[in-house]
Image 1: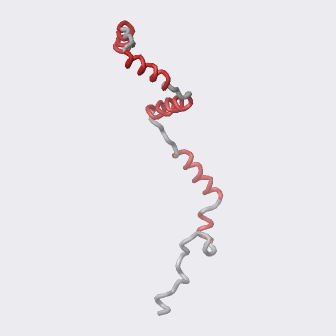
Image 2: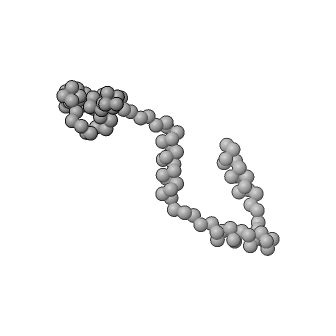
Image 3: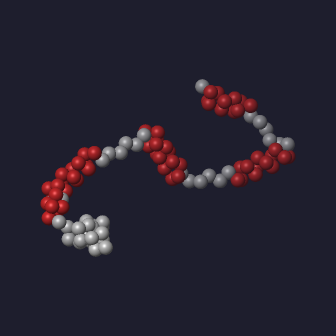
Length: 102
């Protein structure tokens, strides 16, 4: 059984579990680290779609704007409508339609 269960020659699974060999240390010296860091800097880039940038800018603007409370205006309109005193301004409606169409 000792021939099968020979763990003396296994490499450690977790770093730092045992002393690393000189071959591994030589391969990962400071110059190799600097080389790998430079490769990472050269190849690590992210591009964000312009639509996402626009959405983020608009969302930021909307989030920073103050909340508008139209409850009083709505209550006033409801009272006028239920009393039959609400006057429709056809010219104003026509102007708004033309603004959005043309």
